[in-house]
Length: 565
Ligand code: ATP
Ligand code: MG
Image: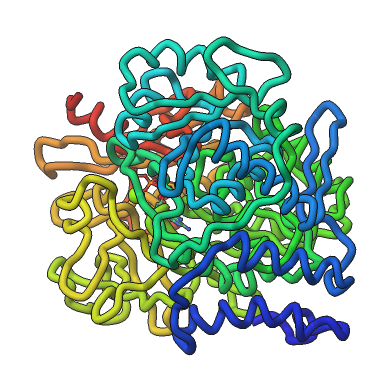
């Protein structure tokens, strides 16, 4: 845990601690979940009051920049003011009511945050999507969710219009744009004239607040429904311990607004802690831009994907001075110990890995003050009771590989998704015995640390040996020739299936003899890990298949190997 002095510093500590501690005690099951909860009125507006009373450090609640030199800074009070106006836009000209659904596809622009809070204020269910979606993806999402309204910008409005004739549920289109567009209401114009008074809806803790489509790493994206309390209260513990945040912190998380990590780390966790959400709207992830931003702004806490850390250390950040940076975190994919070590060498900082799913809040995390075991996802995060279980939901002994699972009986944690929308069979299929089965395989060691082995579908069974791709990939990346790799199952007449590595080469090795290099990589893996895991097949590729969230799709590689569609 963070030192008490960091949380309770100054005379305002007691008040600051009040918001955090109250919700933390609910996570620790010391207090009951309240019947009503609304993140806007119960958390954001509380911080606004403290800020007004001079009891929060004088830093922004939201700080946004882009590559053109534009900057936006809001206090909690300004965020409240704008989001109340936006709530009136949604209710009145847009004609939306409590529990109506709205799809919001916007890049990292400030309006995304205003609209998100506005939806919470009005009880409207927010469904984020990434700007990389195509017309077909948008159509799928509109139909599946029966959304009444879509909010997007000039870039994606034509795609929406192209599928509009077939969307029987969609009633209103709202555009975030300087100009006007036929058939669309204009958000900026409406916001200017909207009244500033708005009474926040008194939502029940269990009412729906948010629907996320999963990343689609393993199949078509699923609609994951969360209640107001789930993400609203369930991130208090992560905010305080995993992210180690207090109100004076400035937290930059780089993920796209369409991915769940944005809700986790650019919204609920930092604002639960009263910290500043920092955003740099970059057209794409560029290591130089990221390193410059970390040098120029007083960012104290940083979160990015494991692949992004990989790009940063390959670019090299030794020559930069990250003046204020003191805590780095990651999640969403396994972090190779090699990358962690290099980051530490280059910056002097550890990377605290966390693990979770769209369906959950943080399941496991490394928290400040805890011994980090490189390659491990850390320990269970309250309120979850996390276990490794067999296929019938039986708890396995420590050290044995099995399904990573969360106890749901006798009580389903309030911060677990409510359901896969319109898919009770799929929801039921995740429950075995007393547990919710994550679909990930792992090991819990004697000290309660969790080790990720792989997604259940990605595990390779070669002549009876079960091999997780992560360990092989972690071994491969230690070799200087490997920029990135993915490991998947490939058919073999004798062994049934074998380990195949798809390798993206580092620039310096592109001209090397591929056959020799393949042999060298095989020998390397045999040396650094148990030899039976070495890739019997190696293929050099230009790039790896990834989801829009940037996650490696091993399933695509596997299907290609096995000649499946
Ligand atoms: P879909 O469910 O549609 O296939 P997805 O599972 O990739 O997509 P998310 O909910 O965004 O969608 O991702 C959660 C998954 O990401 C976890 O189940 C796990 O497989 C992986 N993951 C998240 N954090 C970590 C981590 N620290 N280490 C290893 N894997 C992680
Ligand atoms: Mg998943």
